Image 1: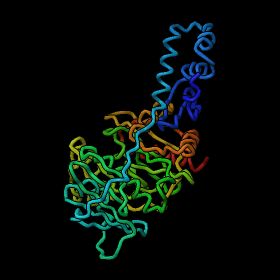
Image 2: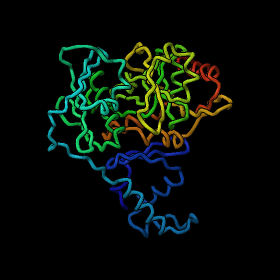
Image 3: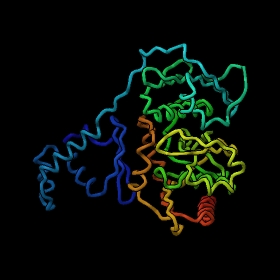
Image 4: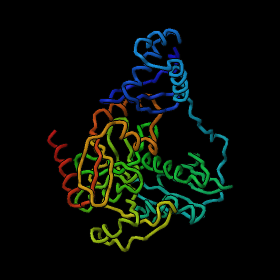
Amino acid sequence: MDNLLAPTYEYSFGDYWVLWFEPSNCYNVVDHQFKSILDYYLQSKDLPDFLNALSQKNIKDLKIIAQDLHNYLKECNRTANVKDFSTTKKTNNKRHIKTTYRYNNQTFTVYFDSSLVKKVIHAAIAHLEIATTNSADTVFDIYLENDDLFLYKNDKLLTTVPKQAYHKLQGKFMMHLFCTIHNKPENEWIGTFHGSTVSDGSSSVLFIGVSGKGKSTLCALLATQGFELVADDVSPLAANDLNIYTNPAALSVKEGSFDILSPLVDGFESFETLKVNPSKGRIKYIPFPKPTQNKYTCQNIILVNYKKNAVTELESISVAQLMETLIPDTWLSPNPAHAKSFLEWLQNVNMYELTYSDTAQVTNLVTDIFTDNSTT
């Protein structure tokens, strides 16, 4: 019954299952009870067969449950809308500001139509800017027209978004920046996690957390204590080796952490204080040294939760708790092979929640995590 609506993949994670539906590229976390009833529904030949299969289990309102399951499956299979950019023509008179950058021996130029549009991208990669008149390996164009932002790469339109949704353009730009500096096409990435990655020079830990929970502040602290900042805010995972690759953007920290970081980061006061996004308030972008490698394995994902005067502790969490934070702002490839690889990768990582307030204690705890990695 409704077998065509069944999930493409289903993976067990302890007390939960993660279901993936190809048409919508949707990941759902369900418990064992729901999964069991869903299986009965999908394996039944018709509604009477389903009702009969569950009649002995003292479950009430089976007809309502059947309708709810049908609606659930239909929603999970709703095809995502993909915008067609093929007929959009590039405006050629918008190259008012030219800025060239360099990373990993790759040079890329970005043309902006105004200083306001430049602020959307430049602040995070300002430390990569170089002075050159030579041609670049890759050329981006970003401009505003009729309240829409346009992003081109080598004269090919990548995306257009309303100016209020500029963060979507930032995400698309970063994806293609990764393609450029790591010499990989877009279809070779499993996804870009909304999280920050830190390494000890051998392996890495991915830190996730909602805004204001201390994720970037923690990574900045760790970077001042000898750890390498691999990626801030956007961490790309490649399909061929399941490694997290470097993101060259500077680490962004909010005003609330200025007092903590000021004595620890050399030249902290010299970094410009900006107000790019009203919801985030005043921020600084701090460039840290380039990591020793371009990519790292990742065995641990940690949900960061800063609480004033809290006891520092690390606790295992369920995949349901992890995915609730990981998925909403993460881009994941719709390729079925990539979805399968992502779920298999996820089954092999440790999932934790880190609560902290004491900076010395949390540094020691993260050091222990890397030590444990090296001995397993």
